[in-house]
Amino acid sequence: MASYSSLLPTAARGILSSCRPALRPAPMATFLPGLQQVRAASQARKKDQKASKKKKGPREFKQKDLKDMQQYALCDAMRYLRAFEVGREPTSAKYEVHVRLKTRRDGPVIRNMLRFPHSVQTESRICVVCPPGTRHEKEARAAGAVLVGEQEVFDAVKAGKIEFDRCLCHPDSLDALNKAGLGRILGPRGLMPSVKTGTVVEDIAVRVEMLRGGTVYRERDAVIRVPIGQLGFTPEQLRDNLRATIEQIKKDAAGLNDRITKEVYEVVLSSTNGPGFSLNGEFKSDDSPDPAVLQGV
Image (cartoon, rainbow, N blue to C red):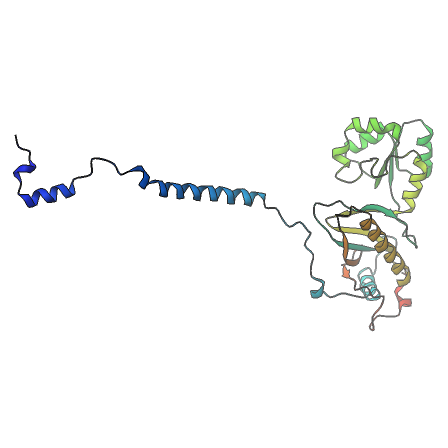
């Protein structure tokens, strides 16, 4: 029996054969180039995503360009700050210096203590962890420590009563301190005693007296903040204390690892209730008042 297509005219059979779909699929090789391109694009996207996850923020702290800032001589800054402190109690207001550092985010921080040429009379509150009932406890209390003992100190810290600026520990109480688990509380505040920081000492009384007579400072977010003078200081006294502060910080920076560099980028003078004035390194300018009028309260 003849097929249906054989009954059609020759021209119709040609058109029908051209419209008939192919019985065999196209070779697989024709699809491979397109498939490889899709895979390559997918792998490229994954690499970009991994690279974006690995990218971190800037390695150095961002500092303002000092060329665009107005800076002041020391006497000029003191004149404006004294105006802000008018009517304040002389004993409750102090000059403060903020030393901005050019440093990396992942580097070590500067932490030390200094003695000023002119005492700022900052009463440091010292806590001492030592065995109760020993001569170390008596000597620490006599030297002026505000909190002394073991369990007494542990209970106060766990209760959130951290009313001290520095914490020392005697070697005999170091195990008890570690077992108390105060590192998560005192560590973030920079108060946890350790051998590396020199706060685990035998001569408790000597160290308490030294800390009470000096000023402890610590770098935070590339800035070191230190009270450097009473409001009644003369410009010369403030200058001497400022020089001592900068020199000590430079020594601290030089004593770090050779691969770590820290530089003093900016020095800002402020007061307890006043704003900050960026210093240009000069003692006085042509428009500065007589230094004699910038003293007393």
